[in-house]
Image (cartoon, rainbow, N blue to C red; front, side, top):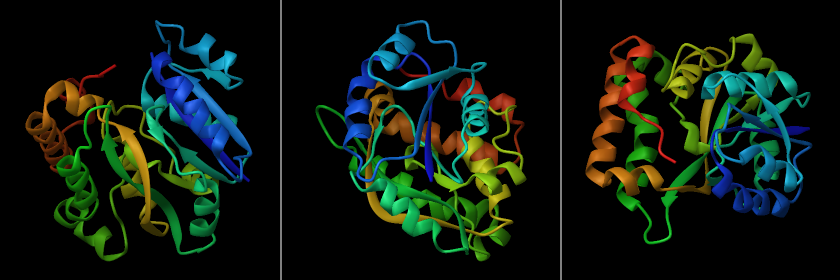
Length: 240
């Protein structure tokens, strides 16, 4: 059994495409759960009109994801962003990947794309930093098979392992996925599967490619150097 947990905040424009993507999955996930963090638009109404189950949680991606995982019952869980679209056989990929007991955390290769262009340079940077970031900042975990995954990767894991390490750190406004990877690496290996998900390029479109990658580097480096997590949130504002 596989559950898909989707944190949501003011995502009404993204939801019809998300619903089409979820409907095309074959096989289907056993549970799909959207966790709303207090949307000011009509996200909840739109999601429910599309037949999607919604629960509410205090705002914050880490809090919302923790609430979603707690509300599921499936042994395998994927955390999916509302602006990321999966291949049709994604659930089969999850099941096949997690059949290896050595792997306890995995994700897809993300390509950032929008209506006007595909962000190949940023997509490449996002791919390669899953290796170079842990090699630089957590080399002992890198040697043991630890890698850093981020929200765009549609990361998935065993629910029992997620709960065993305490889930996402709710004090973190950003880099909560990386922090989870560090703790999960103590239990097993991390894998980036050789399959593609498409994710919205809206941050890059708003900030520009150079500025976006500078922000990613700045936030990641400060996290790697142990800067307090609450101090990083202002460097990574929401883009809707």
